[in-house]
Amino acid sequence: MGGSREPGVVRFGNFEVDQRTCELRKHGLKIKLQQKPFQVLNILLERPGEVVSREELQRSLWPDGVFVDFDHSLNTAIKKLRDALGDTAAAPRYIATVDRHGYRFAADVHEVVLKEAAKGPEPAPPIPGMEPPSLPPTRPAFKSRKWLWVSAAMLLLIAGDSYIGWRYFHRARTSGTRTMLAVLPFDNLTGDSSQEYFSDGLTEELITQLGQIDPRGLGVIARTSVVRYKKGSDLGQVARELGVNYVLEGSVRRDSEKVRIDAQLIQIKDQTHVWARQYDRDLTNLLSLQSEIAQEVADEIELTLGKNPARATPERRPVISQPSYEAYDRYLKGRYFWNRRAPYFQQAADYFQQAINKDPNYAQAYGGLADTYALMSTWRQVPANEYMPKARAAALKALELDESLAEAHTSLALIAERYDYDWQTAEKQYRRAIQLDPAYATAHQWYAESLAYQGRFGEALGESERARQLDPMSLIIATDHGAILYLSRQYDRAIEQLHAVLEMEPGFYRAYIVLNAEVQSGKFADALRDLERWRQNGVEDQIFWAEQVYVYANWGKHSEARAAMAKLQRTKQPPQADADFNLVPAYLGSGQNDEVIALLQQAYREHGNVVDMKVEPRYDPVRADPRFQDLLHRIGLAQ
Image (cartoon, rainbow, N blue to C red; front, top):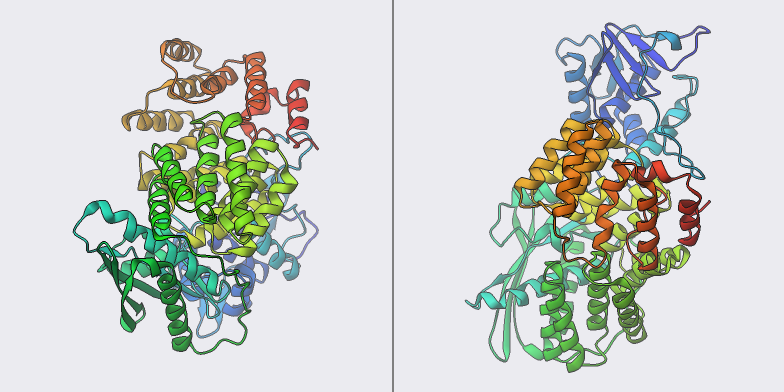
C-alpha cells in the first residue's frame, strides 16, 4: 500500500480496520472481534499478498515467557477471524492458508484518509498528574514490522489474554520448558467429616512444598483452583480447565497416633500412573513426610521428562525446627477457616493463636495470624487502627523466626500499603515474597492491586496474569483482574471479565463492581439489570441502595435517584468498621461533593478504603478539589 494519505484506517472488501480504536467494521457497523484475532489481522494486513509464517505469528503474539498451547491458540484465532469476516478455509476471500507454512491476506487493501474513518469512542478524561492508559500512539501503519511486533508485545503486556482458551478465566498453558502439576484434594478416609481440615491442610502444604522445589521448571496450581476436584475426577476435564501435564492425587487416614497416606502421580497425556506410594508414619513425623512426598514427586516428574540442564537451582529455605504435632494440627485448622474467608476469620485467628500457645516458636502460625488480622481490616470487618498493628506484630515475629516465609512478607507488604501508605516498602516486601515463593499466587495478586493503585497498569496486569496462571479457577483473582481493567479504564474488557465471574458464581459479591464499569461506559440499563441480579442473590443493604442512587443519578433519572436515596436513609447500616463510607456512591451521584470529601478524610484518618483514590474513575467529579489533592499527597500518590 502506498500513497500520501494519512494512514490509520484501511479498507478491504466491505470491511474497515481502525487501528486507533482496534475496531473492525462492516458497512460502518462494528463487528465484534477479540484481541488475538484482531492482532493476527493486523499482522496479515501489514504484508498483503505475502505469506506470513506461523513462526512469525508466534513470535509476534506470544513472546518468550508466555506459556500457551500455540498451535491450538493460533488455530482458534484464525477461526474466529474467518468467522468475523464470513470467510472459509475451503474458499478463502481474505485469509488463505499456505499448507505447512502460514497464512496470506488474499484481498486488495486500501488506506483510508482520516476524515473517511468512522469515529471511535471519546477517550477517557485524563487524571491530573497521571498518564492515562491508552493504546500505542498512531504511527504510519503497515510499514514497519518491527513496530508491529513491539506493539503486539505491549498490547499483550497491557491487555493480557482473556479470550483464547477457556471461556471464563485465562488458563496458563504449558510449554516445553515448564511442567504444570495439580495436587487434587486428598480424600479423607477417616469417616469423620470434621477431619476434612486435616486432608485439606495436607493438600495445601504439599502444594506449597512442591511449588518451591523448582519454580522455573515446575508450576503448581494453587489450592483455590483444585479444591473443587476430588480423587477420581475426570482427568480430561482437569487438564482442559487447569492446563496441567500431571495430577497428584491420594487419600489420608489417621488415628490417634498414626497416619497412612496413599499418593499417586498420573501423567495426563495417556493417563498412566508413573508413580505410586503408600506411607505409614507416626503423626509426629507428618511434616517430614510431606517434604519426602514432594521431593519424590518432583524427582519422578524430572525422570519422566529427562534432566533439564537449563533449570536454575532454586533458593533453598533454611531448615527450621519443626513444630509439635499439636501446634501443627491447630495451624491446619486455622488455614482451613482462613481459606473460607468471611465470616470465618475469627475462628481462623483463634486456631492460629492456639497453635502459637502450643509452640511459641512456630513461624507459620504467626504468619497465619498476620494474614487473618490484615484481611479482617481490609475487608472492613474490624477497625484497621486496632487490627493492622496486631497484624504487623505477628508478621514481624514470623520473620524473626523464619525470614524465608513468603506469606509473612506478603502480609507486611499489604500492611505497608493499606495502613502506612508506604508504597516503596510494600513493593520491596511483595518482591521479596515472590522471590522466595514464585508459586504463591496471593503475592502476585496483591502486588498487582498495589501497582494498579499507583497507576502502573501494564505491570499490574502482568502480575495479575501470573496470579491467574497459578490459580486459574480462583474467583477473587479473576475478579481483581477485572477490577484492574476497570481502574485502567478498559471498561468493555472489565465488563466481560466480571460478567464471566458472575456466570460462574452469581452470588460472588466483589464481582458486582461491574456496575462501576457499566456506568462509566454509559450502559445504565445493564447496570440496573446487574443491580437487580445483586438483589436476587440476597443483597439489599445500604450499599445496594447507594449504588442504585449512583446509577439513576448518572443516567439523569432524578426522581428515581431521590426515591433510592430515601430508601438508603431508612436502611440500617451493615456491621462494618467504616459503614459511613458506604454512602460515597450516593453522594457522588447526587453531586454532594463536600460530603464525599468529608468521608474520604474520615476514611484516611481511620486507615480505610482510600488507596484507590488516584485511579478510581468515580472520583473524577472531585478530583480537582484541593482537599482531594491534599489527600492524594498524604497517601503518597500525588505526582
